[in-house]
Length: 137
Image (cartoon, rainbow, N blue to C red; front, side, top):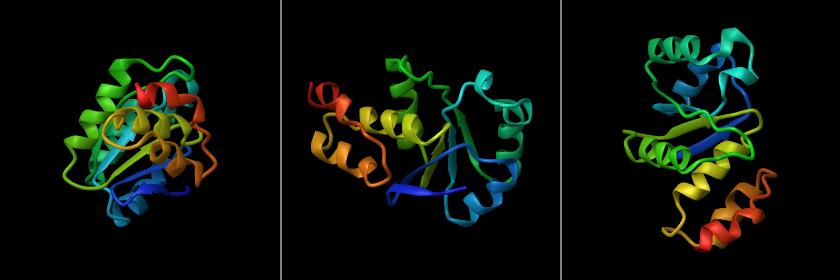
């Protein structure tokens, strides 16, 4: 697992394993957002077993499955609500961390400059330049 902190209160990561949850909790994260649809991953990493293990580890768990190339306003709203409703730092994961970065940027559109919302994920290799029109609208 690689924690890629976009901000002091929001990090993204490629797919995590159940045994990563203790380290996520120990790193100070309190909310875990799963941005992967179950159809993409093996059954032992599906929403239900991940939720059970995350909650047993003391993490708040949010399922917000984002389909690559088909991100919806509901996905953005769910990510925004999960971030706003967290009592502390948020850790989000998907296949590479890209989708978790995209919904983070879209959730902050209008509250931070587009240049910043693009540059922060770029430090980790996520190219969000294609989002510029949506981030400036």
